[in-house]
Length: 98
Image (tube, rainbow, N blue to C red; front, side, top):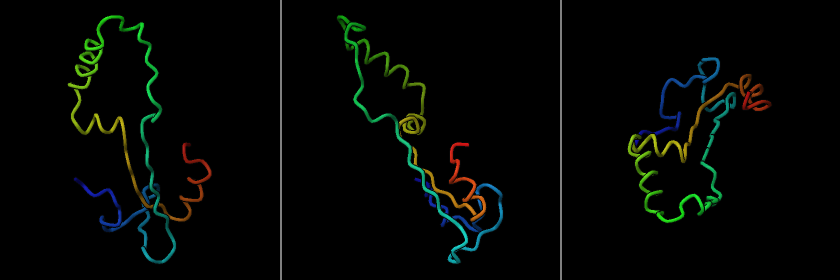
């Protein structure tokens, strides 16, 4: 498994502007993002599968068979970490989805 912690990748640069960062000087931010698929229990309508739940499971397995294990996992859970310089962090934290 590849280590996603950017401290193990040198030299370290801001992931937005590319400026080289000097770790240990308090001039940058390590941002960690964890994303997961909706953790709520699925709402199943059993009327959609009146007689054969096994057929429904086979359909799902068929859809998943076209994905690699990593692609399937990425649809469920992702964890990222990256460094930003202070200037880019100030802009990003105010509008992280923009």
